[in-house]
Image (cartoon, rainbow, N blue to C red; front, side, top):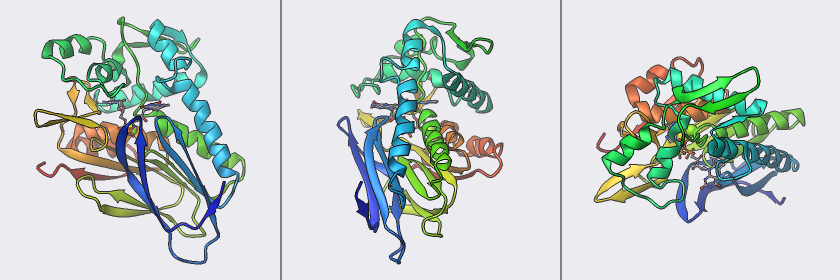
Length: 319
Ligand code: FAD
Ligand code: MG
């Protein structure tokens, strides 16, 4: 990995033909701070970037993220999630079981706004393969029969996960990136890395400080090219959810990739993006998606259930 002197790193990625400008960029002061090593890889369908004064940090972080991706990616036929989705039941590993249990908790806390069983909806609307499709009402109604975390049956005695309705599929896209980054941070700490920034497609963790000062993370403004604010963070996770990167427009209407599982339609709560700062990376990831679905008022109430969590909401221009 080559050492770099950081100035302003605008992070852009074009993955699978979809152009997306990530919600963050990193800004370093022009000071005498030590060199930083920076490395990027395409993982989990996005760019994962690791910045650290320690050369070995990136290898450690990528290794751990790859391990989680192999376990939880629905895009990998050999993963536990893919096997569960195709068989409808599976005795899973402790980690996969843990993620599903945490997802159930967020489903309950958000009154069903956060729901990992949106898999069939994501497919129906064409977001999995980026072959977008505007479904008929009857197709949405039919698909909704396969949606609902209450239809996931868990047996803690042997980690058996079972779907109550044939055709159900879980999609951990709104929580597994956060979990993966959290695992990478734990591995970095085990390896005595004290300073590192990981950005997995807008899912960020600021480990320690950057030469004794907080890492500075800028939040992009979804509607404009500029930024809407800066965060100065030490040992914090940041996550952003929005529909300004993954969406399609049909007959003048915009349809985003975050669904309201109660209607089967893309969430339409008047928000352009939600940013959450939390101690825990998984919590930050899941909360942003849940708040995006719930909207400002209910979203804030949900965030209040998590002490220490800070949120920033950017509303739609006409919202
Ligand atoms: P978030 O708001 O965090 O999550 C939104 C995603 O969660 C949606 O795209 C949908 O999948 C799901 N979702 C929608 N509505 C809800 C809801 N109400 N509740 C819960 N979940 C919902 N993409 C690829 O194109 N190719 C890949 O190879 C690939 N591999 C991946 C591997 C892993 C382990 C993970 C976690 C994701 C992978 N992705 C892949 C998905 C991709 O990176 C997603 O775009 C990403 O997870 C969405 O994250 P986000 O932060 O943009 O949005
Ligand atoms: Mg999320």
